[in-house]
Image (tube, rainbow over all chains, first blue to last red; front, side):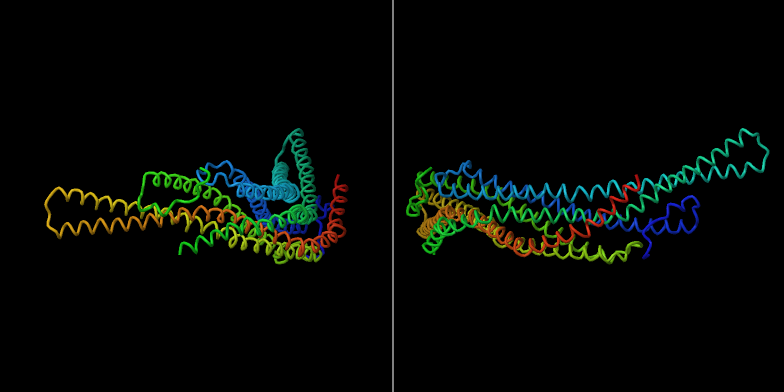
Length: 249
Length: 249
């Protein structure tokens, strides 16, 4: 429905069928928004969980390599080349796991926090306001009913005044809640845009820092290490194994 | 036990208690290796699974953003700025998910494949050879027992020849299997080093290409995009929301 972006607060007192129909459109839009965000939230939660798991598994791998020295292998316990090589692997993998941990934290703060807030605060607020509005409308209807029955019978002044007072306060209450509800629905139209963009920006900025951190701190160090290993230790073992295979066959 | 790195194949025929005791050391070492690799395998499997999940969740997020246009929002369906912004987010997140998918494939080939091969082929081979060796030893013992009982009684030449033939073939068989078993145990001492280094190298090389791919292809593109978004659309929405908040209070 192009062109409409606000529920008119000034028409809440009149509470016309047109306003009610417009409210229906906003409520439908809110339901669609809620459903879309619920999917997006789940996808982001999956990213976040997987990132945490990756971080933990990387850390565990590094720890296992560090523990190689402490293993009680009856043979080859004196293989210092192997031990020191694995220590180096452990060190760089540990650094990588730190990068992953930083990424996890950033995703928590800049992606999960804003989208969770929107889910649990803003969208929830609408649900609650709708209920409150419904209750106050019902109260108002009850008061009006009482008043309409009242006029047919003869009542004392005191009861009459009470009922009229009741109509007045319930009408006032209903007007307040509908204004609050409308204002929140209007606000949600803007909030939902921020709520979409903010976690995405957070996600991207976290990824960019991760790539920067990884490239700057690790890549060079790793490449030197891999070149060393590729030309010496690894090849040494590899050649021995190949020779052994040839001898065997 | 430093200095020992081979079971002597030339002493398999004699099958002395010394050789058996040395075999015990090698078997113990194999058990320790098996247990260590089992832990490392699990940790690597966790990395691999988490990486796959991350790749899938990133892809899903990108798809959800692409689908934003197709959502039937009764309001704001004509918000082209929002739609095009989300399309751009979807595009870069999709590229990132491609990088993740490449990383997953590389981890499968260069990390999971070699360590799985070692677990399921090399370590399993030792288990099977141990069983085969045990069976052939038992067969040999049975034949020798029959032979020793034989000498006390008077048997015909045919039976004697059969039993002696049996001792000879079972002894030959046992010798063959113990040589095979020893050779495999010796080989495992080298193989386990390769089996440790190969998946680690694969892991690191995969990570390095991932960081390279990410930094080269994405970072610059992302940063431009984020600068654009940060200065225009996002701020526009943000300011509107802040103004809205101020008006409300």
